[in-house]
Image 1: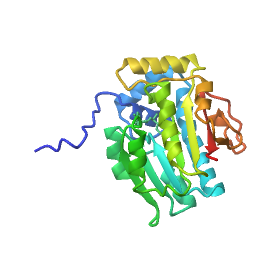
Image 2: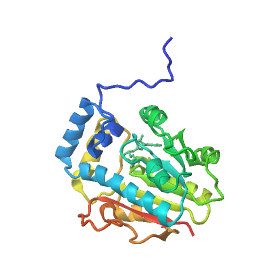
Image 3: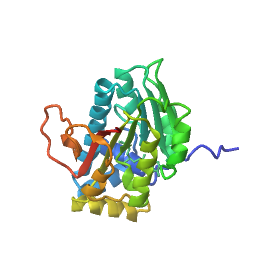
Image 4: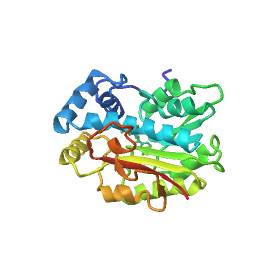
Amino acid sequence: MADTNVPVIRTDIPHSARIWNYWMGGNDNYEIDQIAGDAGLAVDPEIATMASQSRQFLIRAVRFLSEERGIRQFLDIGTGLPTMQNTHEVAQSVNPDARIVYVDNDPLVLTHARALLTSTTPEGVTTYIDADFHEPEQIVADARNVLNFNEPIAVMFMGVLGHARTYEDLLRIVRTVIDAVPSGSHLIMWDGTDDSQAYVTLCENYTGTGGTPYIPRPQAQIRAVFDGLEMVEPGFTSITQWRPEGIARKAISAYGAVARKP
Ligand SMILES: C[S@@+](CC[C@H](N)C(=O)[O-])C[C@H]1O[C@@H](n2cnc3c(N)ncnc32)[C@H](O)[C@@H]1O
């Protein structure tokens, strides 16, 4: 009998996480995703830059917290498909005993995560929670089985909060997780903003395909997610300009920051 728990991978319809992977330069995508991805690029040529630069921001932020703030625990919510330099690879390359919990609610991501998101060191821990971030209490409860909530944790929402159903949900989700972690924990977050009409149109088109809507929000709303936290320099900025390590890049409509819970 067929195992109904094994998600069917459809290669005849495009899939958002695979399109994102394609824009990022990854290999976990099919021709159908490349066609949809190219159609997206025709609407918003900046989207591939956003995808690839978001990964560079993740790498810089995780390395910074690992090296300079001694963070050894990461809760990466909305993991996406494994691609180059995932959170656990960056964190465990600095601190081999780093513990990483990934969270996503997509069956395809789950399949890939089981195969690819495994620790790169014997002393490290990498696990995956299959959960919807609209239920943050559940995520915290499950993460407590792996992470020590008496020690600082980096909470990550990397280009995922546009999927929150409402802005009130978005704030509640982040606040619930941040309230659960101790002082010295950090929030790494970025999201697409509505200051590019091309990006807004791209998101509207995507919603029209029946995919989970992605809502670009004003910069001020994204900035407000960090209220009550201490900004790490340079503060809230285009992700291309967050500690750019000497490389001058233009701003894009993707804004974020790293901040510490006092
Ligand atoms: C644009 S991808 C971002 C991937 C990754 N964070 C990165 O930086 O490359 C958005 C991810 O959010 C996940 N996602 C969307 N809605 C979600 C929800 N309600 N709960 C958990 N994950 C969700 C999707 O499955 C997808 O993997």
